[in-house]
Amino acid sequence: MKSFLVSYKLSLILLIILFSQSVCANKNEGFINTKIQVDFRSMHVWRGIATSYVPSIEPSFEINQNNYKTGIWFAQSIDGNYTELDLYLTYNYRNFSFTIYDYYCPPSIEASSEIANYERNSTKHTIELDLAYLGSQEFPLKVLVATMIYGDDINTSTNKNYYSTYLEFAYSTEIDDNSINLFIGLTPFKSYYAEKPGIINAGLTVSRNINLHKSITIPFQASLVTNPITNSLFINFGFTL
Image (cartoon, rainbow, N blue to C red; front, side):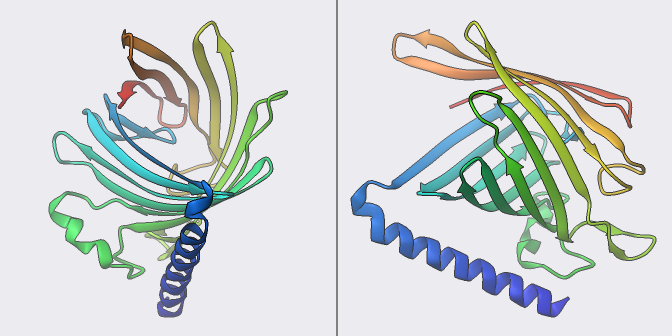
């Protein structure tokens, strides 16, 4: 475990250094894009699991440079019972993307001081590798395969990682001024997501821009999400600044 932790930290530091050097070398050539946004959601649902049933505030910051992007994403529910801080690094090649995530989900704000804890049996970090096919304009079907490889993904019965895997198919289209995303996600075996294999996340998201004034437009979205394994139904909506 210690060897994995050391290797992970060294690899992450190396990636950040290489990315920073690449950004510095090209910043005068117009290759850098940054994005800051704040999302407001009525609740937080992730892959068919409700992590917060009350509204949450979700700011993020991202840097894009050529085929790479890296960023930080944060979420906090208004009741203080849900906190999350994620780091990610993505490489895009043609219609494919490869991403490494570091999800950090402490049980409360008070426990967020354990952010430096990567010990196998006590960490609230989860390291995940994602591979996605991004589709094309002719056929906008996206396929995602995501596997947790370390961290807060322990099977308490065996004290070993589940290596929880999530597979999702999503299809995007437009009707009038509405962007519609249909999705279905499943886990192929017992994992963090469910006690058995099956569909855990199915539904649709509708997005559109709302004009508040001549120069003020706010992206708005609403989602209907079902989890057949847990017989759950969620309606989530929000907007972005």
